Image (cartoon, rainbow, N blue to C red):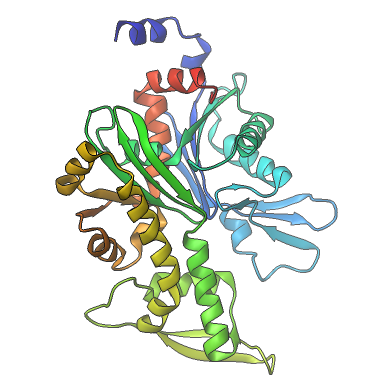
Length: 352
């Protein structure tokens, strides 16, 4: 404890002047936490650029609204895929936009940035994230595993010698981790998440109705009628798209039963990674989980009936985080704000 206090006292003065930032750089959405202020940005991880010059037209929600509607000379790109950088140049432009949007008080001192990354990414992917943030204007970059960030964000007592299990279902990845004494005892990241669910819905509609729909429509279907467990009152909605054969506009009606079946393979993949984690959990920590269960975070946590499906599959209590979408971003911010010792640990491990 004394060492932690000493490190805080001797920390460079610039640390106290800069507006440090925490970033949940997600496949579907990017959230930015501004130290001492809270979440300042919550926008889509999308960039619209000129097809040949790569000039940036729009970033975030504005760019997402252009998807499927832009002329041929404008490309609407999601630069993150499966939780990692797929387009280095466009990711850098997106990060620069978000950092500049929130870092306004002292532009002479670049911010320190904590970025949440999937626990399963490679060292090459880690370097790509770090370099993108440095080029976008960060003074120093710390990489924090998403499960740790999510656990901190939902308020789990990660420093205690008890099992804290978190399941973070994002757009591109699902991260499962068992945490004790501020460290990951076991973690597994699979590149399955909300995007896979959207793709499953798109494929089902094409296969069952011979109709083509876009990403935004698939996501809307998932949100409005998607479920992972039978509902007391099943839902339905009207869907508009293009007839795959005739090429003409077409309207159909889909039900929650259909969409549940379409999403079942992806949900089963999440169930399997959960079971794998529990099988590898040390016995003493397993006994903690019998009563404590685990917490669901990320956008996928909001799918109707998913918590019940996972509880039935594992026999454990499942709690959906109160603000599941913000858990990872809140965690990155709280590390900057309240857990400076963890930044020192990240720096010593070569991640900051």
